[in-house]
Length: 407
Ligand SMILES: *Cc1c(COP(=O)(O)O)cnc(C)c1O
Image (cartoon, rainbow, N blue to C red; front, side):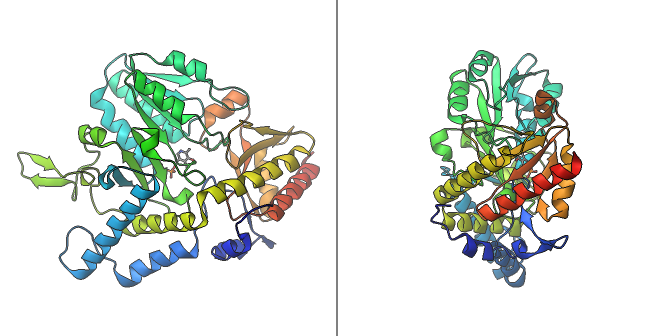
């Protein structure tokens, strides 16, 4: 593969890639579920617990100051990475699901019966269920942007769905089940023309694309650190200042208040209004380290290399008779969802695991997509910049072997 990246050197940063599974070298192709964690991030976590573990924003003592400084520097790293105007527009969350629920709950008081919320047909469950709950609370109506067989949104239908009743639009930047990169620029611009706010779920995109949130002019954008070389249990919600000021707090507790009496509590300034309780301090700092790590490799090089891996894997897999790929959009990231005629995806996944190959099987938290294709699920191989062409060959050989055993 033509790449400026030294993949073998990069792989040394990920000791887990050296291990064996069922007596075979691990081939990790489940990056869309969670990415592996490089030593640079693991060391950040160790340094924190060895050196300056303390609660933040509270103590006058040195450890607390050091922890607070490191946590706030991580917030600035996130701000810079996503090109966000103010660091207080970066809300630390436990992940994408938390960020979406924070917004969906906050919108309860802004919606009335008959208002409309538009979501795409290829959403993760975490981007469907909170809106259904919001509709139940408010009497708002959920409208769905349909998609075609390739797994691309029908944008004409989207424009037809929009009206002055539309208050919110929700869409993922990249589909975790199909890999489709959605035209979010057009989605955001059209929604704003009818006065609707837009939340983009960037959980799947952020490992491959470095979005410029100011240029996108999006109202909310949410990611999880664990999909981009960081730890689990931490993520960020970006919100435009004007929206974050209007939205009510999500949870009550310590850290989020300015003053408390039994008559009335006033809330802290942004971002603390949305950060009740002791946060995942170490996780936030490690998230910053993960961004440093990925930026040191470079997102352009990552995107180009992953695209080559995906093209190669697509060609090789399609040479297997009876294999169908779901999600063939013109713009997609390195996710390949597939099935083989007459074989249940779970059976393929089980045999691949015996061969040391980690893929995901099932509905990928996106049952409506599976219903659309009338299938129970797919086998999903998702690639990262630390995967190799040789690993693609091992996958393809494994799938051929599984097919021979199962038909
Ligand atoms: C992973 C993922 C989520 C959920 O992320 P959590 O970290 O589990 O909260 C939501 N949307 C998409 C597109 C995802 O890929």
